[in-house]
Image (cartoon, rainbow, N blue to C red):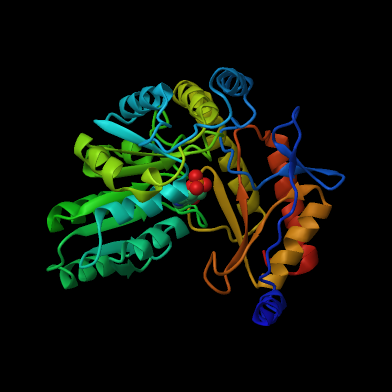
Length: 393
Ligand SMILES: *Cc1c(COP(=O)(O)O)cnc(C)c1O
């Protein structure tokens, strides 16, 4: 096992080592997190709509725990399929205006399982170079050929589609909003290419579900493209504030997945309390549009405060993801360390999560941040960035 220490030394030497740090919640102030003795403004949470500590969600989860118990006891195909699952899936299909839905334990398992159920040896998956790791792992597990296209480059994708014309099954898969830059996939063009080449299209709405659309359905709905997408994927772990994931599509697709998606078949069903929490969150996500409006306003304010200070913030205009690109790994770590000293929890994102020399602080916004918290944060970013000489306005 000696080799591990050697490898770790190299990893740490390049400022790439990660460690597990404790972050506790502050129940009266959901926008904050506790690290050690200190309360920090949480600018790195995926609780975009501020639902993770919503009393109504917690209450239904508590009731479900008392009536249904702690665990579901088995896989859904065995005896773990509680009635609440079917009810939730009907609500999801209605929300997404599609024939059927299927709940997975989390987004990682949904992506890694669904891709493997749709393609295999002799098939091909066209995947954006910046897609989430769970999509990449799904492709590897499926044993299909991985045709990676340059980020959002439709000409490159077209070339690859031509090249693999003769493959058996073909699938295009993309994030709707990319996790590290907050930019959007060209969904209209992807839908056109899908029709032109007769391939399947799968869209991961992990960072757009709950955020776009009048009822938070996601970016595909916002653009009127829902019917062009064969496989809609989204999570309940981010804007829903709970845990879990969904796939929406045709009845045939869902029937196939029940038979072929291994993470669904060979893993225990989510506990009933989680299903209850998701159902309640789904009602709030659909009805409390003010949370989305607050998020749009907050991100406009935060982005413009940073731009006015002269900083390079990623290409996207996502209401939730605002990356400040530093470049060097060690400098990015020093930067997030100084922000923490100043009272802000932020995370340095480094390779291999992002390409080399594009290490960054990925700020994420929440509907519960106030204007003052955001403008104060922008001012601090400016002051610290200048002090450290890592940012050059
Ligand atoms: C977070 C994320 C996932 C994984 O979802 P979990 O529910 O956290 O497992 C999948 N895809 C994308 C794009 C994500 O950002």
